[in-house]
Length: 177
Length: 157
Image 1 (tube, rainbow over the protein chains, first blue to last red):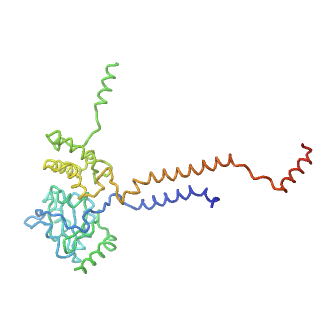
Image 2: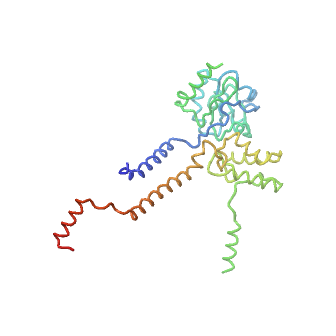
């Protein structure tokens, strides 16, 4: 035992190095949501699309769905957009929250890039987003049929995120009563 | 010349750290504004993450500064305002992390490292001391004979 004592610093170094190595793969901007398991905070937003109904927090229940927080000024949202359109084509309900944006800009964005949203509300002041704990767009919430937040995706949904995390969760939620 | 240097120094001392709190955000009541500054300096901007919302120029930080002032105007205590932010963004918004299961390693780690180091130093010092003070075992008969032989062979007394 004594003879190997000199290896202790090397072992300690390897432990610390392993901890750092594990930390390299973690993105510090991906914060856990404080809302997991809790109902969507109350909001009542005016429409993005002219002549539309807007989006209320009560709309987010009845069946599992996605609430996508986006903005016309957000570059990553443009990258995520085609995937949202695919989800819509697959029959997934996606509601949109247009964060810190003018409704007219949001509407132009949707008419130019395609519109994946069943309902879309304009959160010009950003208060509804702040209540949801939004730090930056895009963020996407998975909401169950009882209107409770079950998952939050920070940043664009990559095809991998959809296949491995969100779709399995949505399938589970659809099976829940 | 001396005067100029003195003036420059005085001005340099007057310049505080630049804050991002915009004039139109500030409250007219200096007491409330002071409380708002105190809270704002302890809340992390979730966009830039290593600045307080008072220091950050991120748009969201500005929204949160306005929001916290609204809460104060509405009569919230400092703690209520902080709880309001924590309810939305988690304990991550506190620049001074609270002690909980997630941060236990952060708070206790230095003491653990100190204790381990202390034990190491203690063991080392004890070993060194005993090496000096220990009396060696007496020679066995065989060793004594061999020693005598060597003394004789070399003609030593």
